[in-house]
Length: 123
Image (tube, rainbow, N blue to C red; front, side, top):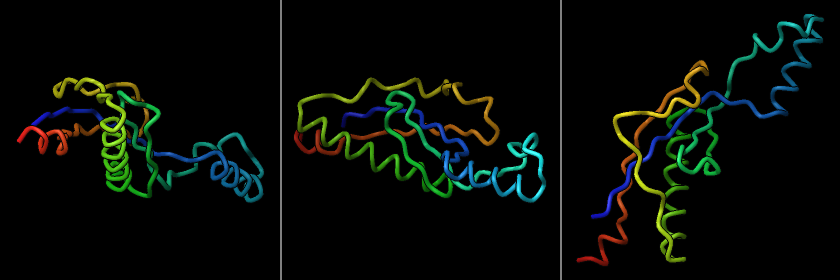
């Protein structure tokens, strides 16, 4: 069975609208925008596939974001098979990427991806 493995990075995430509204509320309550950015807390998480950074998912918890990204990866795998393309090569399971290591709340998870359709064709 063809297997590939990819690192998923998950970080706390705020979209621009959410951050702007929190900054506005803070300014109305406290009058000082200087420390407003440091007082906000993340309400959602973004999961990013390191080899395909355009493939992203946002959810209210890291588990949900990672699961959504896994579903997107499965769909992308089906699409690639339809088009005769292959997913990118596997990443090293021993060394996680360090792109977001400086972000507080960052985590990385190694995902083993099994191509079930390719397995069915080979049997």
